Length: 228
Image (cartoon, rainbow, N blue to C red; front, side, top):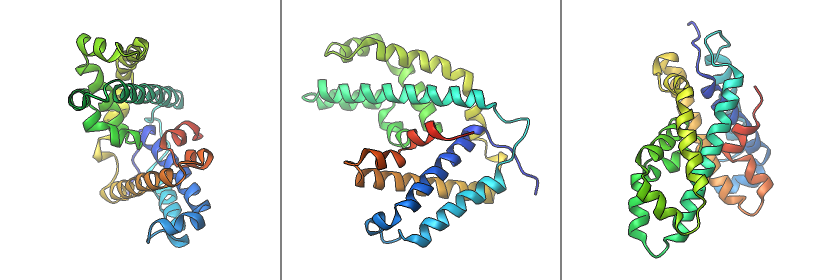
């Protein structure tokens, strides 16, 4: 079957998965007691499955997005998601006695719908999250969340990043186009991606007080450090 090209955003995801799967295998003897299914055989199988998807379903081709654009996209996403996390933390601190406002704000600006998946590396959720925040925030909300001390420049950067995302819209269109990979390859990709996300959740909790190892299971760090 002829191979189809995926946007390098998807390639970046798989490369990040490969990095995390490698870290998982290197630490499996320490992590194995956390989950009944985690053992050496599973860790090696996961690495092999990631490698198989990279080799069998992602091809070099002239239609792929250029690495320079992927790097720019990656930095934009990391910047925006960092600022979104800062806004979230500030709202939780400044409105700790107003849970109703917190709930309404997070629902209106996309946190409730997208934050969990976005922070675990889902690119479509990242895109939708940033756009949702920019589209649903208003002057009244900005004034309210900054009156407690949040720097207005954080919100301004988010708005600018949301506008800049239009330059990367084709990347996300390709990511969501299921015709670009055969059904078997897509199922393999989705399964591995879900497993890697779960590994990140559990392992970062386990290594909460070990920042070096914790970063090995941080999807954002993996995205930042992968090599083209």
